[in-house]
Image 1 (cartoon, rainbow, N blue to C red):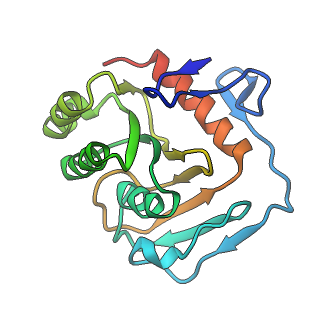
Image 2: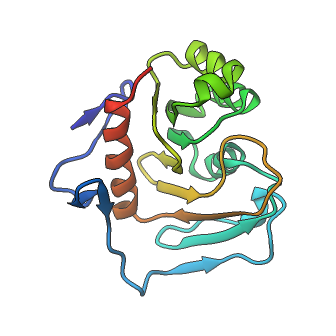
Image 3: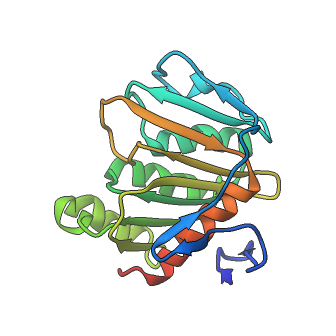
Length: 200
């Protein structure tokens, strides 16, 4: 399967570690208990409190709602350098979209895709209109509650999974930054499949 991200396409082969349906409607990836983890305490008030991301080490954190998924992506891009980005979110804010568009225009984001919940059309019409205008053909809607951000280039394959949306929400949030390519491929294949089936 080839997913077009302009001239820097990313290919996922069927034989690579990825989401394999074991039960209809369920994608599963088993990860060993001996994975290297970095547990960040206490509650974070800004993404920089996460410190550096290291290859082969997952980072677990809680935040007090002071930053959202997009702000976390921006912080990670400072470490990865220019990269592709794929964001799935139940909701999204217009200022978050505007910031991502500026980074794409500067070349800090090579390409970006969005998978958002169907209800954004009616619940948040202004941000949805901005999304449609700024990122035509790079968004899809589906029944979605997963909050995931994928960031990748030649050196990094990050999968950020957590409770944070791409909106401002001053509540306790939980997240994990995975650096494993297996987990990245698992998320990439699943989200790409949903993107291909989604509506505009």
